[in-house]
Amino acid sequence: MTEHTKTDGLPGIEPQILERAKPRSERMASDKIECNACPVLCQITAGRSGACDRYANVDGTLVRVDPVILLKKVLGSSDGAVVPFTGRPGMEEDDTQGKSGESPVAESEWNGDLLHAGEVFVTGVGSSTTYPDYKPAPFIVSSRAEGVDMVTVVTEGIFSYCSFKVKIDTDRYLGPEQANVRYKGEVVGHVTTAEYGSQMLSLGGVHHLTGGSKKEGRLTAEMMQVIGNKQAAELTIDGGSQVMIHAGRAPIVNGIEEQRMRVGCGSATIGIFAKQLYGKVDEVIVVDDHITGVLTEHQAGRCLDIPPSGVKIRGRKSTPGRYFQVANPGIGWGGTDISDPISIIEGWDPDVAWPGLRLLMTSTTGEHSAWFVLDDSLCPIEQDMPAEVEKVVQRIGENCEPSLTTVLFLGGAGGSLRAGVTENPVLLTRSIKQALVNVTCGGAPAYVWPGGGITVMTDVMRMPDNSFGTVPTPAIVAPIEFTMKLADYQALGGHMDYVRSLSSVLGTGAWHNEGAPTRRRWLQQPSINAWPADVGPMLG
Image 1 (cartoon, rainbow, N blue to C red):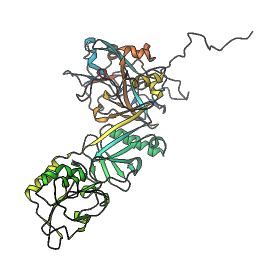
Image 2: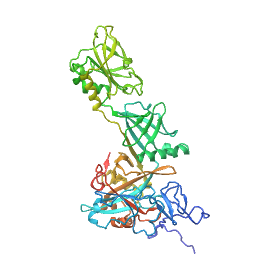
Image 3: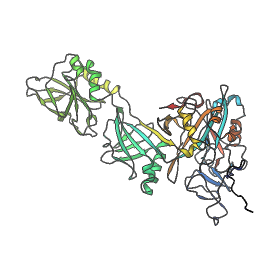
Image 4: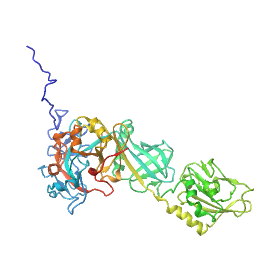
């Protein structure tokens, strides 16, 4: 008689979800455990951490060493301390306590009052991961906000397809478009387009993480972690400058800290200040790498009926009073390579210009400026600038905004991460595009790009400190949360069996024990960020 062994179609037979796979080698020392939190599968000795420093072997149990970050709308006097999940006996004494000057472990201050559940948000920072991607997210938290049952799915995503877009407010020339950007000698990104008053860099990305040498991938991940965690990184641009970037701070170009973001291009500067210079000057030239402005030819000068000066400018004339390519890019006047502004003047028309003509030359930030008067041979002679003209130049500088470095994290939340939310991942994508699910990164709002997939972009300055980690595959680890109504979560096929109340989560932590965080820390939600449960997604 033939015995049937196949179970296709038979109900009630599901694979068992194991928290830990069998070790790859049966000869592994008995005091070691194999970490299942990423594809590296470190074998960790008791009391030690893995290669990423994020997971450790504590008395034979794999734990996430950092506390999970929780946000509150208003902090109490005892908040900010690291406290254990009280439902995890024996897990409090891990070897990382006090590692970074953290407060000693204290008793939980949460009293389980669900009336305030709408004021608590569990972030992905320190929450652990869904790897190897077949299991639910470590925290699937239900709460009630303004009478509505909500749920937030929380995890730390492992991102290979991710990068940082860096906006550097500067008038200096950083390097040619498409030039390589290096970190400790390895190529980690490239220069992209210049924008108004800024130079953009694209750093990281899957090409550098996985497509080059091991060293390139390792240093790319290191650089991404550094700038994502709001720390300084020194970069070198091929054929360009050396730049120190630090999110939220002024960039340092070739050792000089930038101060001013340009008020506009040379043409815009002419237009903005033409009226204020009327009658005080006969000609104004605003030197700029992109568009150099000439007042008497410019439409603003013509509207003010300022007579022509007869000046002839080097470069390519675009439209009246607007010139391109007056000099090469550089770190001199207006982002050009010149230190002598007169060098961009080709000459004067003797039938138009006159001795005694007053000429102001300035850059778009007002950092460089000079005052000239034509002599009898129509040669410009530099003289002391009149006080009334200098006042306008100072106003140009006054209208420049402070230079900053802005770092945006851009990551694609792929199918594997989505599987931690639902058994049918595409439904999560569709729900987000239907504005049913808000996406945040560490509680910070995330802009969702149009098109397929879940590609999000977040300002790292709005995220908690040290939100980013790495794994040696190499890849970046970043927090991500999906917040929605509980009914919508059920409709998209969510892991309803793993939904837990906020009070339960605050007491015992993640639903699993393998690789779970053992402690938590309260932070106050920054006032600049909307409360995640109160708003919809930022859809593109």
